Length: 412
Ligand SMILES: [Zn+2]
Image (cartoon, rainbow, N blue to C red; front, side):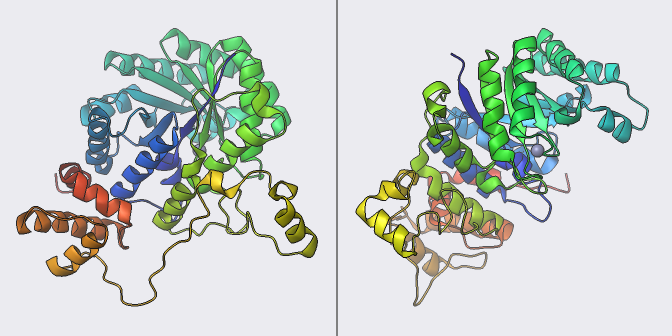
C-alpha cells in the first residue's frame, strides 16, 4: 500500500510570503524542529539566490554531521538548465531538488507572452532534469505550477517526460487554491494512474480549502497506486492566503474519521513537537497564532459554556477529539515579569554570561565566551529580535556552523 509523506516548504513558500521573512538562523531552527518531528523533507531554500548560499551549505554540513538527519534537505529552483548550473555552482553538494515551471495555458500565455509553447515547457523541464542528474542529484521532483488550471493530458505528458529523464515525483501545484476536495481527488488519482509517479500535493488557501484539498489529494494518489507527498508550512504561512498547515494536516491524516485506517504515513510524525514549532514560527515570522488555530490556537482546548465545561470535566473525550498533551502543550510557560537581562547586538560579556548561565551553559574561558557572544550579536543584527533559548544553545553548541550561517557577503 502506498504511503503518505510530508514535505514542509516553510523555508521556501513561507519565506517568500509578502511582508514576512526569517533569518538564516531561524530557517535553520525550523529545519531542526522539522527533523525532530519526523518530517520527511524540508524544502530548505533557494540554491540560486546568493544570500542563501552560506545558509544552505551550513545546513548540508549539519546533515553530514548527523544533526539534520534523517530529514532530507531539498532545494527549489526554476526548471531551467541555467538555474540548475547556478544552483550546483553555488551549492555543489545539493542532493535533492524540486524544479518548477508553469503548466497552465493561462500562465504559459500570460507569463511568457507567446514566447513559449507547451512543447517548450516540456523541453525546458527535461533539460533541467538532465542537468540536475548530471550534477549528481539523487531525487528530483518536477513541479507543475498552476496545475489545477492546466490540461490533464498535458500534466500527464509533463509527468511522464520528467519520469523518463529521472524525476521521481510530480508536484501538483494548486498555485491559486482553485481546487476543491472533489476535483483534486479525481485529478490526482488520474495523474497517479497515468504517470505511475509519486505525487506531491501543493495546496493554497485562497478558497479556504488547503488542508482539506491536501488530504483529498493524498487519498487520490494512494487510491491511484502511488505515494503521496503533502506540502505544508508551519502555521500555514505562505503566499497570499497561505499553504496547507503542518499541524492541521498531520492531525487530519491521523485523526479524521476513518482516514488513518486506510491511508498511512510513510514515517511516523511526532505530534508532540507541534506546540514548539508553531510557537517558534509565530515568533520568528512575527505573526500571532489565531486563537482558533487547529491544535495550537490558545482556544483549541478552552471551554467556557456550562454544557461543554461540565462535559469535558466528566470525560475530555466528550468535547475534545484529541488531547493537548499529544501536541506537546499543557506545560506552564515561564514569563519574566521582573528584571530581564537579554542578549542582543550590543550586549557585553557580563550580561551574556548571566543569560547563558541561566540555561546552565558555561564557557571554558573568557575567550570562548567572547567568541559565542560575538556570534549572538551578529544573529541579533540579522533577526532584530531577542534570540530564543534554542537559538542561543545552538550557537553555543555549533559556533563554526553559526559563523557560516551568519556570513553574508553582498560585495563579493
Ligand atoms: Zn506555493
